[in-house]
Image (cartoon, rainbow, N blue to C red; front, top):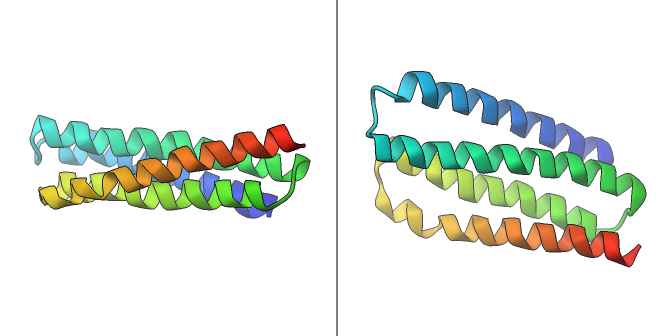
Length: 122
């Protein structure tokens, strides 16, 4: 599983860097400053949690088990929901997408709790 988590983290970081470059260059002239800021928050949290997935890869070698697996799944799901909804909101202006963003944030929080618990139980 450690290789899977590491690959997922690396791919997520790649997408985060590409999205950041897209936002800085292609979106700057096409969306309002407010929506660009929303997009940038999505990129920032995607990058944070790409590194969290790399931490899960390391943790899986030290403390294998369901808590590390749950943390990785929550970080992936959180990225898809949190960052994905912010990207879509910025690109489409569909305000209703902001209503699902906190679900991704809850997934991030739960992932960190799982990772901390895995460390403490070992």
